Image 1: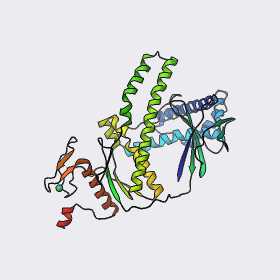
Image 2: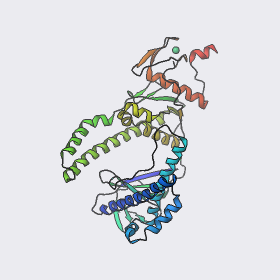
Image 3: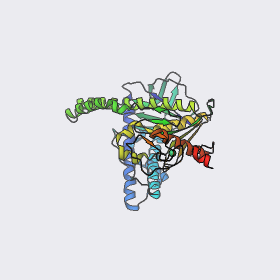
Image 4: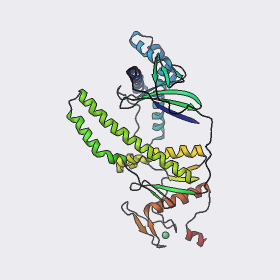
Amino acid sequence: MKRTYVFKLYRSKKNKKLHRLIEIASSVYNHLLALQKCFYRFYKSYIPLYRLQKHLTKLKQFQRFCHWNQLGSQALQEIAERIDKGYKRFFDALRKKREWKVCPPRFKPARKYKSFTLKQAGYKLFEDHCIRIGKEKYKFFKSRTIQGEIKTLTIKRDSLGDIYLCFSCEVKNEKVQESMTGKNAGFDFGLITFCTSSDEEKIESPLFFKRQQKALKHAHRKVSSKQKGSNQRKKAHLVVARLHRKVFRQRRAFHFEQARLLISRYDALFFEDLNLNAMKKRYGRKINDLGFHSFLQIVKNYAEQRGKIVHLIDRFEPTSKTCSSCGHAIKDLDLKVRSWCCEVCCTEHDRDINAAKNIFRVGTSTLRLGDVRPNKLAIAV
Ligand SMILES: [Zn+2]
């Protein structure tokens, strides 16, 4: 099992050197990408990884590119791997003919390029919150002990210029003991309530982005009032970046908290497999603000560690339009309708709870965890 530990590096003048290394990495990336793009234009295919890496070793011997050597050979090779991965994904998507538009990796300006990765060589960890990268020593706050074997170290910077160390470790599959509760539930994501469970519980979303929108508007206005290229404009940009980071952290904390709660309560959890790209097109930034995808990822990770089940049901299952008590499906249900009454069994339904119950029913029957057919159908049989 893989686990990543992230530590923040203390701010120091020395960090400039790391920023410089990231800039070098960006120039290598753009150089190799230009080669790939050229190759693609002529042959409609891409340069295989080993040839790209071989070419890279030749290039760095030239006077013109000798500054690339500051980065270390493994980090350089890893950049070639990144491009290779991007192109592989691009060709895979082309082959599968996805519904959304696919494009090959793009050029990245140095300020948008964020990280480089070291494998075994190029760094050394010391006992006292200290690390040597290249020839320089840096200090960071080691808030946790690193468990498992360190595979790679990625040095990453965020848009505020803070640098983070991300240790990717291979941990032995240690399952955290969590008592089984014997309860299963289905969950429906929604735009008005974040998540509704089939036990009729609702989790409201705090909509962190929406809360900061006023402040963001103000900050953006400050940016545009400053002269282009000036230091003041850079400072104003930092304010915007800080607000975005705050929103991101708040949302992530909320996700972790809720995921932890759900996993401790239930043994098997069922969700709907959402087509987020289509939803984004239709509902815009609110979908991003809710962050369903990252929430699901966190729930899955927790479940894997604690031996619980997360199952996604098919996205074309008509969960909202089916009555959860008799199984009668209605033809049309407008999004504005929050509650409706079944024509056949006259049950009053809350839209979200009904959907969650249906998700639960479909999920349990596909995993064969129990028979939860609609009541009346069961009687008729
Ligand atoms: Zn009904």
